[in-house]
Amino acid sequence: MPLVDTLAIALKSRKWGEADRIVTFFTLRVGKIRGVARGARRQKSQFGGGLEPFVLSRLSLFEKPNDALYRIRHVDIEEPFLALRESLDRMAAAARLVNIVAAVTAEGDADARIFEALKAGLQAVQLSRDPMMMAVLFQIRILGQTGFRPQIDLCAGCGRRLEQVSRHFSARSGGMVCAVCLARQSAPCLLLSAGTLALLQQAVRLPIPLMSRLRAEGGVRAELEAAIDTFATVVAGKRLPALDAWRPRV
Image (cartoon, rainbow, N blue to C red; front, side):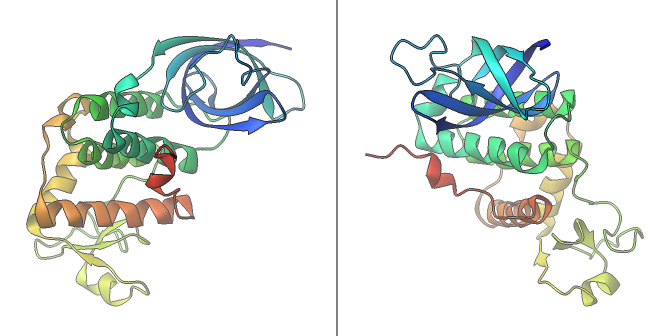
């Protein structure tokens, strides 16, 4: 029963049995995994808040042969991201990021770029005055790291270079499409303004440390959110969980 030591970000957690929890993590060493924390719901649990969504921690895990569930032995919190729970807007923005990672990554497929993009996204959401905008921008970056970067330079349908007047976004095709491919689309495409297309291009190309400089308001922001929400749904193959599901219940 080999021991695994790794940094991890908790994506979601659910009750299991009378006192345990099953937690889904995206880890640096072994990618997305599910682990069971025995006694985690007891009052004096050793795990504390280390199993809560969004928390960055160092895990000690046992991998049991022929079992999809790891055994969580120990958790040391590295960054609790407490501010994400102090604001409903930040909580919803963080949920957007962990939801997309949970939806588009396969279990056991490690990728340090995805891990670092998720970590940087949570940090940006925590510090930003506009957390939802940061979440949309980092959602684009995370999708790109999983191999689903929106195509913005060539037509996503035929691969030809786009003309300046081509500003239609096809979620099913994976990005911008030319006039010829637009006519062949079986699903509606979004017509993006020049400002929205420019913002999308910057979000795809800018280094992660500079992404917090991007801003958008009004119609540009609405168009970008609509395009990325639709694209994320296509990539995930399902609607992502509603953001208000993360709001505390009274």
